[in-house]
Image (cartoon, rainbow, N blue to C red; front, side, top):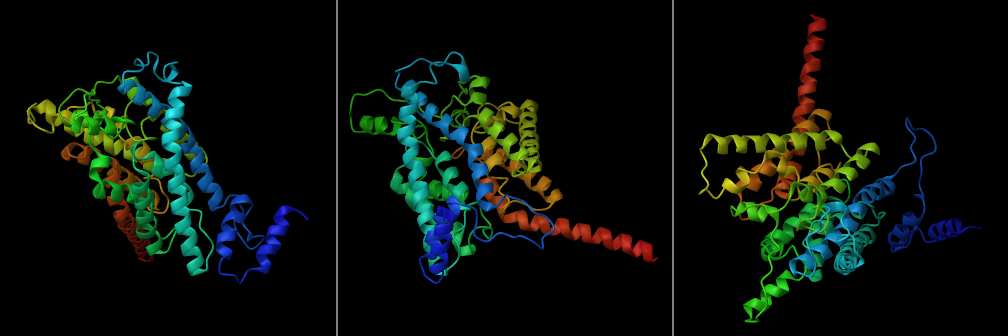
Length: 408
């Protein structure tokens, strides 16, 4: 008798136990679900929620590994211990064991805390409500470490994860019932509860915050600038990075959102596996480009002068907005969340366009927080059901008109 059968028999013998959902969570993670459909269906497929979630995680793994290298690279670069990489993504100065180890020991604890706290709460609610543990947090648990600054305190992350899972998902009924993306709910909680750790020019490079604290205490140490491109542009400064560095991801930022190249590869993978909506991705890009073009036109007309606090980001080349900040990562991995995004075909086009359009608008008009994709996606999560409602009603009216025309 195999291990799977033994575990299945154990589960059947203890099916009335209160703690069974906790055991089932491990059982279904290692094996196929216990209940599968064998007949009476129109479509049969081998995929399930667990496999779908794991596919999304696979698309994010390159961003995670790159983020580890980049964390170490930005740290050593800021402290003057290495020189700027000469060949970008293919530079030997970037892909070093030293860079990886620095990033590994900073990023892995974030991943562990995210999964341990999130899954513990999921299991608690499953046991309390006597239902199976849902695999929805598998993706959220990976998203969270990739969208926070490298030196985010672990206790702070744990509090945010608890808030996001309970308030952002469980109060609505769990996976598939939430109206807001849980990962972005966690990120929003961090931003509004602990703003100094989520913004500024010191939080994006490992060690920069501690260096700043030493300076504040009167220590004679050199100041470090770990400012992101968006932060520089919002203050009217030059970006200071080559376009290809932006595309490859050799810039300061959240752990996994800097490399547009790897995010693009992840997008192609999600589209190929039919998990991510290409309509939402494409329309988001179009919306961002349209808003960027409008701002460029305003600057070209002379309505905004260099003395304006909006000039820096307004005058940025419209297509550069796709390469900086968290726009690409948010568009590919969070705006396409099938639970919180629009469900209808036309609704996806509208939803995605507004995500991109509003993202750049917030980015420009809010210099204190020069990144709008998080707020734009959360806002459109709220309006997604409304968009779908009017799309469906529009289709109903068209059919009623055709029916009346035939009757007449």
